[in-house]
Length: 441
Image 1 (cartoon, rainbow, N blue to C red):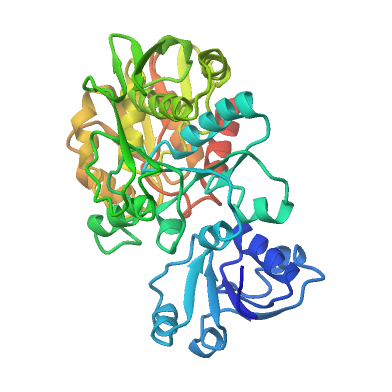
Image 2 (image 1 turned 180 degrees about the vertical axis):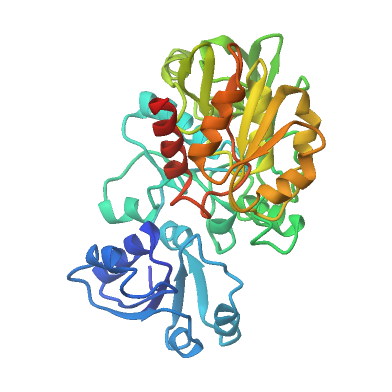
């Protein structure tokens, strides 16, 4: 695959570092651009010791971007930055790491996107495929950049990717053999001009597919599909003549003229949202003719992931759950619906531009709401009239307040509805902090 000699990499997270190593290994002259200072980036730059690059650190400058023939963006970089708009006007090609890596991959790709459930579904499909095929690559937005697969040079029979809307913004030819759209609800409105723009970014996962490919789509979603894949729906609400659906405690897969039935209870994952995740995994497994015993074995053994309605401990009959990964309103609503009993909800963080009012529709499940972070005033304004509320300045204060107001039989749930970047490094840092405080009670 031909690439220009001079390439700029924008954003120095794990993805940017991996891309830098890949392009340097192919003899390219690389530039590194990040709005952080060189001092702030020192730990990251140590990972690039021995690699030759030109650094463009601090505020972005137009002249730095226009000196390159291609620009590769990391997922967290807004593709509509003014310097990038100017680069496009100069006909400089701008792609993301997913597009770059896919140029060097011929193995079948399964891509999972959606507002919520991506990581759980990607991991579950990965577990099923590992039992069936041994070595598979699981990566993308889940934390292992796809370019690492190319760097490692160890062929796998299948590549299973979690794909975010940010990554889909910069694809050109990226074509998954199976694309999964789990759901779409309001999210990232601090990045997108409208909910419509966010949905359009998600729908791009289908645009390069052909009639040889599959698109697995929630019946609650009506995407605009520009490609021509075979569409397979899934639903927890209705019976389907083809696809996957839930009914009376069972999960049905109807595909290739056959019906297979699984008991929902064989999976320990809680909630309707996880039923949807399991349905997509079942449907995917059947597309690739994986046997029922292997599928059931994977479902039984997969206990879920940290920071996703994760039970921490029970104290004096009060159960504590960590759902720090719930960074939008729909994720929190799904968590509330998956737990039986009265809930003391700890929420708040960095606001992402949407409304919190939908939580009012499940307010009967909330005994008390404790808010923290930058978004607390907005949450109080929108939900304060529906549930009893408290405002705290720290996670420590929120947990202690929750413990004070809870009684035996209640649940304390951290499910923030917001991103973590106002008070924590990321959602994992937030969840781990919650865990430590709860363990110290």
